[in-house]
Structure formats: structure tokens, C-alpha cells
Amino acid sequence: MHHFDDKDFCMRNLCRPLILASLLLSLTGCPDPVVRDSAAALDREQFGISVLSVNLLDALNTPRASSTGVPWQTRYTRISDWMTQTGNFPDVIVLQEAPGYWSCAGNGRQLPDYAAIDFLLDGIRMASGEQYRVAYLIGGTPHGSHGSDWMGTASVGGCSTQGERALLYRPSRLRNVITSPGSGDTVVSAYQIPLQSTYLARSLQCCHPAADRTDVCSVIDGPLSTPMAGEYEGAIGTCATPLGAAFARSRLATQGENRQRPTTDAVFTRFELVNQPGNFVHIYNVHRGWNQDWEDRHHTPAPQVEDFGSQNINALVTDMEGRFRRGDVLYPPILVGDFNVGLPAPGETFPLLTSYFPRFDIGDFFRIDGVMFGKAADFPSKRPAYANLMQHMPSDNCEDPATLWSDHCGIYFRVEPSRR
Image (cartoon, rainbow, N blue to C red; front, side):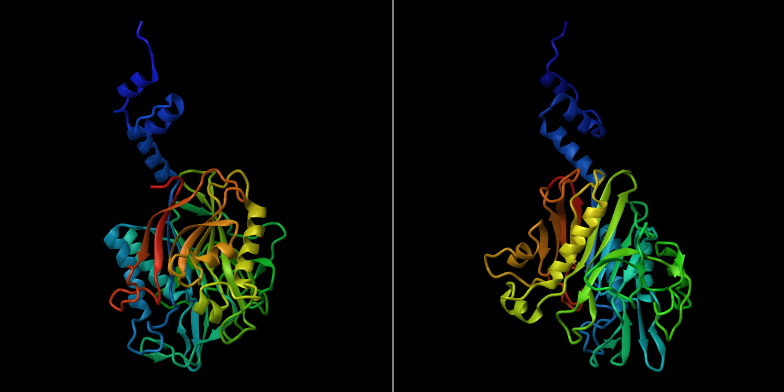
């Protein structure tokens, strides 16, 4: 009778299909690196998600104080062109400074509702062959632009802009879990934002899209809903429009000219992996407000000054993880976006981040954009998370007018359960 041992078993099965790799590891303890690496690669493919984060700089020229700067249509087209050229089709696209609409004196909508986002969606659909959906497009109260700002060849100093945070995703890969209010939730519009509390925000209305872009309203998540009186732009009116619900937390600004304007530092989304049902991912789209004058000069927390932006983000994480974190969460919470931390001093590794977010580890960063993962001790999950294949978008020299997407870099990476 042939004597059975693990080594002999492994040698006779090295050529089995890769789909058996993880089974071999668990049942036999086979130490062969080919099998082990194949199992890890399969695991990353099955449970990984790709993420693109871009601060769009609204719909302004870059530089914004120039009528000859790069217009938003060119910048947005470069994003979808990159997808076509590389074959990278992010499962999640988190956007900061995303335009909802612009209203200007004398000509109404200088930029119709969701027109710029729909322009981007059209380019992505042409590149990927898939219609991405809009999980949300939310913003604080409308605010005016600077007198030196330009949109193409038009000065927009007298205009009011609305929008800020948006998230686009591939419905073939992910399912947005939060599309309507839960028991006890009240949906809040951009015109009635509460301060210092977590709330369910509704997206901007899609009442006045451009005549050739009305189909954008149908790709916004959530049931049709009509805002109550005082919850919409009075001069424009209201309509039944998709809810686009997402959890957020707001406070008064600590930077900029209007310190009484509510600002939102992060927005929360809970996704389920379509091909791995029962596995959920928590993503926080971050655009942190900061104590601008001190941090830009010193790259460290301002003495005796509280960082309300990071406090706001941490409070949202506490509330959302307390509500939704169960045994079905695949990864620790993922913070991704524009952290506004500035470059660290030589030899330092972002002291601001480790100071402001003690429950998180740095996944990867480039200048002010990056990703952080919750620590296992604070946020138990099925798997650890790693930021693999990180790229700076469109390149390390991301402010070159010939290639730029915005006024600073974006990032692209994959969240995966093992490091490459």
C-alpha cells in the first residue's frame, strides 16, 4: 500500500487548476509557494475592489483665475480617456468638489443640474461599456464663487454653486445598501443641514438637467421623493427626484471667507460585493476642512487649536460603525479622499494623520490625497485591508496643464485582503 504524505500529495497536484489553490492550502498545509501565491492572487481578485479618488475642482478652469485655463470638459474627458488607455475601470469613484449646478444672475443655470457629472458618466460608459450609478451628490448650502473665477470663457463671479461630494460606482460589482431611510431616519436637504450631529442627507435635486442630459436622473440611487417647503432652492422650485441618500455629519467651517457656512468632512456609504454576497464594505468619502494658515506653514497641528474637521470625521465613523458594523463587514472602515494635510517635513510620515486619526493606519498617501484603514483592534472585520497598486493620477507631475485632471493629484488603487 502506498504511503501517503503531504509532500507527495503536493508534488502530484501542482498542476491542478488555480481555483483549487485555497482548498489545497486549507486541507493539506501544502507549503509550495506557487500554490500559496496563486491562492492569495485568487483571494485578491474575488474580494478586492478598485477605487479612484479625485477632487474635481468643481467646473472651474484650471488655473481657476484664468479665462484660458484648462476647462472642466477637457479635464473630465482625460479621466475617461485614462480608463480607455489603461483598462482600469474603478469599482468606486469618490469625488470631492463635484458640481451639482451653477446658478448665475441673468442667465439662470450656467451649469444645469448634474450636467457635469453626466458628462463624466458618459465618458466612463464609453470607456468601460458599463453605466455607472450615482450613489449620491450632496453639498452644503449654496455659495458664491470668487470674482476671478472662470468657467470656460465666462466669468462666474456673480454665480452661486451647489455641490461638493459625490460617489459613482459599478453596479455589476457593488450594491449600494443605503438607498432609502431606515426606521427613525429623517432625510435632510442641503437647505436645512443640522450641525454637530450625524444625519441622512438627500442628494441634490435633478429637476433642471440640460435638455440632452435628462437621462442622468435615472441613474441616481433611491426612490423618487419630493422635498418639503424650505428644503429646496426657492427660486427654481422642486420636483420628484431620486433620493440619493447618504449619511454625513456637518459643522461650521474653520477656513475660507464664510466661517458660518456648514461644511461636511466625510460621507458614508455601505456596499455589498455583488459576486461575494454577504460581504460588505464601508467607504468614507473624505474632504477634510483644516486650520489652513497654521498647517500650511508648519505641517503639524496648530497649538491650542482643535481640529474640528478630523473630529467630525471620527464622530461619523463612530456613529456609522456602531450602527452597521456586524460580522458581515469584509474590511475595516476605509477613509479615502482629500485629507488636506500638506506635505510632511523631511523624515516624517504625516504626523497630522497619526495625531488626528489614532484609530486608523495609513494605507498610502500622495501629497494631500490618500487612504487610511481602521485598526483591527478598534474595528474587527473578516479580512485586513491593504492599498495595492497605488497610482498618482494622472501622474506624479499632476499639475501639468497638458495632463492635469484638477489642481492637485488624485489616486487610484485596489483595496485587497493581502499585500502584493
